[in-house]
Length: 355
Image (cartoon, rainbow, N blue to C red):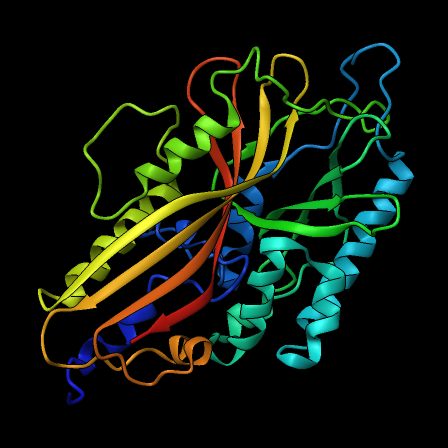
């Protein structure tokens, strides 16, 4: 098979953003909204996306946070320091640093990000690291039991855009590590939690909430598919990230033309954290969705893949099919009634294969 479709080569991996915290949603909200990978988004993001520190709201009597305010602040500072160190050493040399900073899907995403540094723009490289300046602890899990969770607000070093950072630890002998970094969407806000001294209760059976986390995650994931499913009333409001992912898939399919079939699936990959907010303010859920872009060449021609695809797969030519795997990190707000909304999101291509 000869190498054709070279005009479509760069499109093969175009749906995947090559930064763990670079959300396609923000850059695609509107023609007037700058990309979060750009330093020009700094003022806009700060002005329109906010996260408030926890305030006392009379939690259950005797409730105690998993960490004291001082301990929580120290753990967040330590995790951000580790993240900054890992971002400074991409590739295999940074393996130990990434393992000290991240866990689970966030580690897989950061590992891929380290491999793909050469594909990033200057603005994207500037936002690889978080800023160590003034992170804010928003919530900690309640009780001394494990696993424990800390939810914090931080900013990216390059653009100053706000992000929600989720730290987890499974036990007393394991340090907190980052399980999710999600960039806040324009105009998004995060409400109040119970004071850190009391901790935030787990969602549990989801009583008093508009929808259970698992049901919400399943519905949101299914609705993101391409080809798009039939329109249906869902338990969520379509947000900027949702719109951008759907548009990106449609644009990708159009650019590839009739010779290539694109199928995109989104499957729940787990709930990282699920904490109730202050009384009357619902709850917040940090979750991961796995996206798979499957491309099938229907002719006798071949595709020349993007640099990112080649780095992750080791293949420079695609004869029949390709699969790109991406983790999507999303933070939902579930109200007491009404529809859930996404307040922060990010995605990272982490694997690719082809034949």
